[in-house]
Every structure is written in C-alpha cells, then in structure tokens.
Amino acid sequence: MSRISRNVSVILRAERLIARAQLAISVKRAGFYIAAGVAVGLAIIMLNLAGFFWLSAILSKPVAAILVAGTNLVLALILVLLANSINQHGDASAAVELRDMALQDIESEIRDSLAEVQNTVAGIRRDPVGVLAPEAITTLLSMLLKYARRRKETPNE
Image (tube, rainbow, N blue to C red; front, side, top):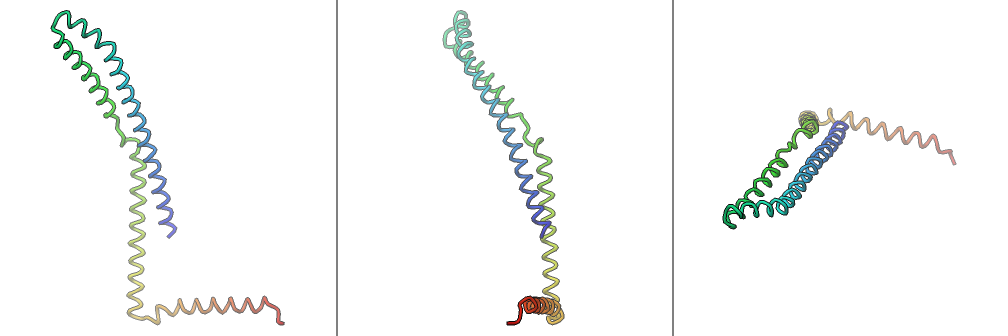
C-alpha cells in the first residue's frame, strides 16, 4: 500500500510540473499575442496612413486601401504563426514520463494485490480452516495478551 501512496504522490507532483510548464508556455504565447496586437495597432495607425497616401497618389483610393489592408493582414498572420510555433511538449516531457511510470507501477501493484486476493480466496475454498486458523489464532492470542496486561496493570481491589 505504501507503494501506491508513494506513486500517487509522484503522480500529483508530476501533474503540478506539467501544469507549471504548460502555464509558462501559455504566458509566452500570450506575450507574443500581445506583441502581435500592439504591432498590428501601430502598423494600422502609422503605416496605413503613409501607405494609403503614397498609393493613392499612384493608384485609385480603393485599390490603395486594399493593398494597405492586405499588408496589415500578412504582418498579423506572421506574428500569429510565430506564437503558435512555440512547442509546449518539450518542457513537460520528463514530467509526463515520470507520471506515466508511476501510473504503470500503481497498475502493477493493483494486479499483484488482486492476484494475492484471488489466491487467498482459492485457498479458503480448498481449506477454509487451514487458511483462516492462523489469522484466528493470532487474533485470539493478541486479545488474550491485552487482557493479561490489563489485569497485571490494575491492582486487586
């Protein structure tokens, strides 16, 4: 049973490590998304005006507006792809492996315990007195020893 509790503790620790690693990746991604938003905002404000006025001198105003907007979308797409390219499995792989090993050990312990219970039940079916007698004798002797100690400790009145 101590192996099971130890493995449960290991699993919980591994899950905490996995959660921390995933949180760190999420924070990094959020930073890139914020940077992408700021860059898009600045690009929209500054480059849109400059690009629009420059292109409107050469082309018609609707075509100039479409080209400026397309450029902004390409920049935003590049930043979003950069944010999505961050690998979240690299940092947590050791903790995932540790968790999986602990789960396998728990499964093995449960299978062993189940086999032991099945063997005990089979023994009880074959020879109920032979299997249960040692347990009963141990319990009976334990009770008699406790009773004897109590009598010895209490003075006769």
